[in-house]
Image 1: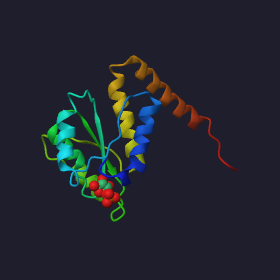
Image 2: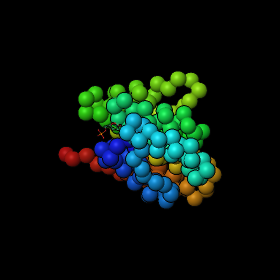
Image 3: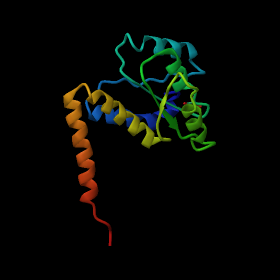
Length: 153
Ligand code: RP5
């Protein structure tokens, strides 16, 4: 993520990955405050064995696009809800990548963070049957919770 202030949002992605037993790391890598670290992080991602990068940033959110520019590892962009523009700035910054350098863009805020993690799990599940089973169970549990829910009179 671009800042420690993004952690409240991106933590939700981390919690999902943890619940599925997917090894991951959580780092602050800022496109504008630590540009050299960003380049190093992206350029070494493949050799370090990363399979996806969930990149969350807010405002002029160039982190996901800049990471994607320096690696072919899939970048999953999460627009963090900014104070000034409620995350519309983050969303448009991340989603409007010019053709050739894709960033898979998710919803603004916590929903996006959770879904980015679930999407990464879904991709990995094609390769790891135990993850596939956990994802099927997650979906079923979610369905059961809705079907079993009741409303206050
Ligand atoms: C972006 O600027 C970060 O991703 C964060 O969402 C936003 C504000 O950062 P802080 O000023 O809170 O560190 O780079």
